[in-house]
Image (cartoon, rainbow, N blue to C red):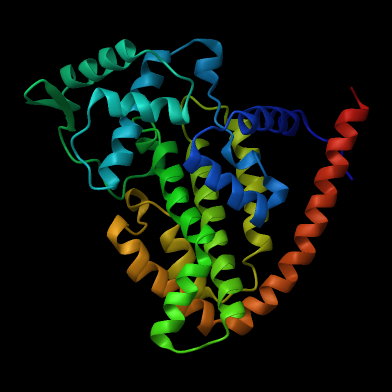
Length: 313
């Protein structure tokens, strides 16, 4: 087995630190899903560090990038008018907390640059995109302006809730479409949803590699590690299941993914995934068998690398 690299050491140390600091209940849901579904990348998936912040350079542009990413996240949810307080709450959810006055300063700077405009409703001030964010743009150019972390994490939260509440959705499906094999559909539903969550983080890391503020070599390694976890759970699945469900649901609309509205989650999307859980049961049975063997192997490799790291201290 090859020796653990300096980049992997950085990832493990930073990820463990971030993992121990999770307090947000919805982010904890994601962590619970990853721990259950892909424990070999536990904590690594959520790595969020920026070279600019660490070196205290270009921090103004970094804050603007993150604030616009937060407003993008709300925009994708269908909420177009955002207050300073809402930006502040989301900022400390995903990044190192900064003062509300700092957030207000950058919101006003973005307003002066005509990226945002203000709208008043009594004493409440809303910030709104001056123009709608582009769709179909190359990620390199998009990530220069918008941080995509909030949007991808928000999508991961949506599907993590489906994973956690899988039993409820299977029962609802069976009550409508007949008494199928509940245990089989339950297992397959969770497997598909877990793979969507995993692929969301693969998509996220592939965009963070392109960000001007990021530690690119670290995000390259992160994308590689998550990519292995995705491949271990998808490489013998039918192409139509991968393309029409897993890849479609795990990408945000900015990069040609599906636009998900909250009211659609418990109806159209769960029904489509449950239908696939039943339709592709033989393919999923084989993939799950292969995946379990690979997961066990990856966990052994991970433990060996961590032991090696401890021994070298």
